[in-house]
Image 1 (cartoon, rainbow over the protein chains, first blue to last red):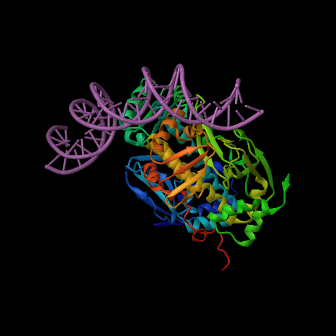
Image 2 (image 1 turned 45 degrees about the vertical axis):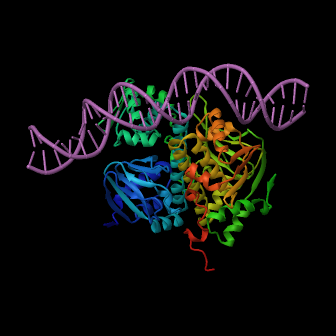
Image 3 (image 1 turned 90 degrees about the vertical axis):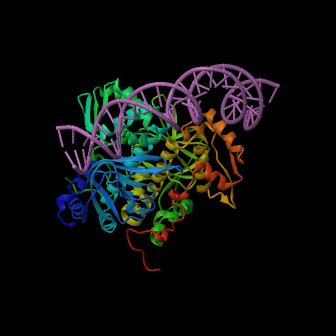
Amino acid sequence: MSSTNSRVLQPFLDRLTKRSDLTRTEQEAVLSLPAREIQVERNEDFVRLGEIVVHANFIAAGLVGRFDQNASGERQITALHIPGDMPDLFSVVQKTATSALQALSPATILQLPHRAVRELARAHPAVAEAFWRDCIVDAMILAQWVVNVGRRNARSRIAHLLCEMATRFGAVADGTAEFHLTMTQAHLADATGLTPVHVSRSLGSLREMGVTFHKNVVCIADWHLLVGVGEFDPNYLQEDIKPEERDRMVQPPAR
Amino acid sequence: MSSTNSRVLQPFLDRLTKRSDLTRTEQEAVLSLPAREIQVERNEDFVRLGEIVVHANFIAAGLVGRFDQNASGERQITALHIPGDMPDLFSVVQKTATSALQALSPATILQLPHRAVRELARAHPAVAEAFWRDCIVDAMILAQWVVNVGRRNARSRIAHLLCEMATRFGAVADGTAEFHLTMTQAHLADATGLTPVHVSRSLGSLREMGVTFHKNVVCIADWHLLVGVGEFDPNYLQEDIKPEERDRMVQPPAR
DNA sequence: CGCATATTTGATAGATTTCAATTTATGTGG
DNA sequence: CCACATAAATTGAAATCTATCAAATATGCG
């Protein structure tokens, strides 16, 4: 199942170059990483708590949640990951998992062996920098989740989450948005620190504002209205910063 | 004010080697970084939102909070940093600040120019790995804050925060703990997503369990009792993993 | 002492949870 | 394609937790 076909990793490279500037040589080195593709079922943990992992996971398809829980077993989703994300890229330097990773929909995962990733990072400092930076963006998203859960009411929390996901999916256009989100209301509750019952009520309130969530499809009639309710400022997603505007560990050759 | 006296950076090196295995050469390279020492007053922002920073900050003394806020200006502390921490090491690869950094007590900060830090990381992959890893531990702490704020009641949130800080300060011994924490109850409220009034009441409840917080000193009579209330599992702090048990980007010379 | 900041306390309002029941969707085998 | 079983979403009523408002008390400091 191991693959030497570099095309499999093109989406992985796309994600890296979206945020970091890489030379042709570096790009080819990334594409030549060995990768193993696995299928994960809905509700299946593919990384368990406390586990020592030996490869990083890249999401080729599907939705993945990072799950933590309190002592009574109530779950808290601390991150959502969409195709193109590496939910545990950090495991390359910190191999003990302190959260579980679970698929929220059937998912296709590419597993990249730590050994190979580390070798790549060692040989190409700019690639190591790209990895590091990717982890940092995840951490910035995480910080906003703390704000969301700590300082917003139920409706705003859900609105903010929907805005974030719409933006990450690139689904916003013409003051409107529509996208797939394979989550149940119970999942939404776990992500926002609420009860499923209250999520249902809050969604009802959002519905009156032209925001619907049926059959895993989110429709946002008036984007700016929802942005207001969710107090959403996309800055933290770092999506508007061009890779060539960033520093590089090593200066790139003149272009 | 720039310093070439390497002893100034010894605490910085100590922090790195606590979590990462570095060779003599690498250690000396770290110590030879240029650093500028600044004093920051209580309640002073030394990194402001949206700012493009040109150096990373190392806390030599004092307590620092990472502040975010919602649309109504209610503040949320998303991280607390103690001496030995680098609250914005991540800025080395992501220079736009998405949170403010504010001193909660008078603080001494060492500023390390990005240029020099990047040069160091480029020349020594294992040092780059140490930096990356340090950011990851911060992110793991952040994830636990989401759980704390999202899935625990007021008393448990505060208990958990006190447990975390006691552990990070290394203040736990003999089933008891005592340490300095230069925060007001309003700060505690900002960290836990609560109201100052409710923090006061919750502290009252903890007081009945032998936990006091007066004049910036936290006293925990029965450590295990508080651990229970706060549902505290120190695993995520990664404090018990020895640096030599971790991988290195480059294999160290035989020892 | 007197001002400014921090903490405590009480009473009340509001938000969210809990519990329980019902309805609606979804999937599966016959 | 229906019938059934299961999962997901909705609704109502009551309980609980947390916020809000306002006032009182304590604490630190010049």
